[in-house]
Amino acid sequence: MTEHYHHADLPRRLRTVTRAVVEEEGSAAVTIARIARECGVSVAAPYRHFAGKEALLGAVAADGFDALREALTAADGATPTERLVAAGVAYVDFATTHPHLFELMFRAERRERQSAAGPPALEALATLVNDVPLRVPTDVAVRTTWGLAHGLAMLRIGGMLTFTREDTAERLRAELTALVEGIAPDR
View 1: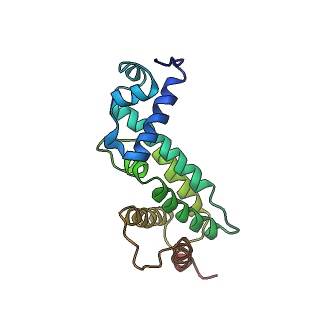
View 2: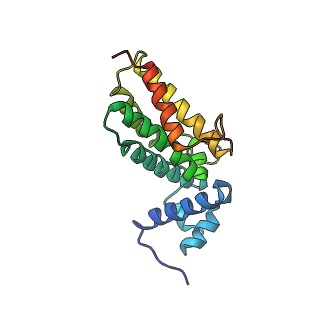
View 3: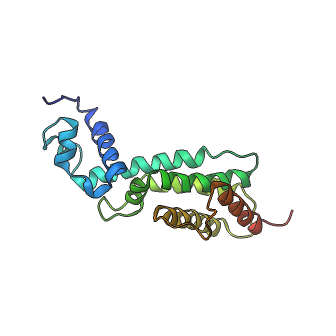
């Protein structure tokens, strides 16, 4: 039996089901026919809301960027440095908790090329970097911080321990703190 969704509900349901498939099996497992079947609608129904699979996956990637932005802005700490370090740990944690979604977010082979949700996620990081007094220009610090967190995330997703066998959140926090303090001016 086919479930009927109000048009306002179907796009959300399509994204939710697609994200579940991506999280479990990766984006290659997504087909419009499968998603429509799992949503209980005709194969034509998703096309009323998304131009195709790439657009649907783009929407799921955008949802992922929104979730990443929320994780970064929720980073807690008593000082700007502690908040920035917590955001770095949150970035790596997000990636390792959602590896298939993270891959979809940062690899455009299967989805629309640019997500409008990506820049706000990066802005959340830039805001945290801006709060920390540094010896380097903010744009350099943002790219470096993002590159470091992203590189560590990719190493972990790939099953690599990053440099040592003691690759824990506490060690990551200590190393990120040392790095940020190393580029901060002497107090």
